[in-house]
Length: 113
Length: 115
Image 1 (cartoon, helix red, strand yellow):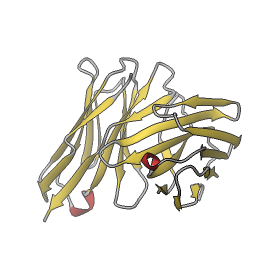
Image 2 (cartoon, chains in turn green, purple):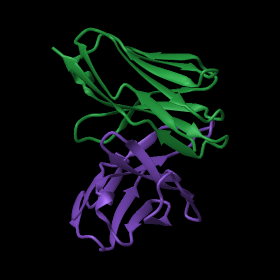
Image 3 (cartoon, chains in turn cyan, blue):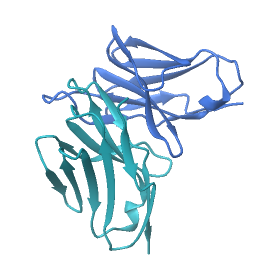
């Protein structure tokens, strides 16, 4: 069936350094790729998304890239700060009607002071 | 503020019991989803609904059923709870934009423990 794979499962970076999380998807019809951030004890919240007609999108310190040919997309966080510590989930829409959203298994990002 | 709410927030039950988790939203969104979250497995889709008459199975629907009582309410039931259904359950809503899919808004979650 359709799936989204996410790596790494845990990531620790020094404050101020960059962090990169990578995802691959299986459904060639996927056209929407959101990223969610979940702080400890909180609900997931959207931080950035990208659609299949765009290769890259940036919002301040956060950027997402999409390679449709290879079926992978990545989240880049630059100049990391303590408040970036959280679990990050990638996701992809499934099917040409985009009826389902399937999530990756999550990456726990820790920022070392 | 328009929001997504879930009740109860925490529930402990015993094997074999029937339990219902409820989700309500004041966002006016048509699409509603139920996910479960387990450590290391991310968010897995249980059921989703596009309107009152449209219910669809997700990745892991076995052992679960749902009811869409109104546009604003989507309930998840465990007919006979078992320990491996212990998890954090999230409801989510979406208002599909012109592109057909858009941001999901999650409720606060229900932590369910089955003994």
